[in-house]
Image (cartoon, rainbow over all chains, first blue to last red; front, top):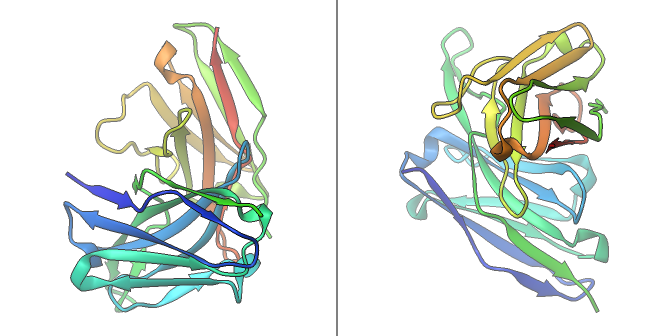
Length: 129
Length: 108
């Protein structure tokens, strides 16, 4: 069955970086984009960025420009999210989620369907001095 | 950036119908997706592309979208439907994936 398994909880000091992983199984890794979404305590979901797992292209939310790096390893069916210059407001549960892709014959490109049909279990990142 | 507004809470008795709205400018022109999130769990997709259901999601969950409001309807509500529900769209702006503010559904 489809699974996205994320790495374990992290505690970091302000100014540090954190790198999380998301290992996919049960489907063809390159047929789905992987997004990262976070949720601060008691707050709603916030989209951070995504990676096209086939060609490695990424797009990040403007909010995280310069601090967020998303990468992927096709051979390991794993996506990674690194967030730098951490501050207390980055304390949150971080989720990876997959987004189906399809081939647009008219444009001759692969597109994402722009919804998240399977999610990882989440990783709690705590930023505290 | 695009904004999606949801009521903070909806209360419903078992067996009745819950309607959760998601407001956005001309949202009817976009595809709306809905997620259910129970406490301590990851979100789960319950409706995509306005009104389609992933396999395994009961027919009790349905969606509609027109004008400036999209709606998730849960018929014959059960205790297990108690959760937070989020709408989500893709927008052409700089932050293309937008979530609503979430609605807590309480089963009385």
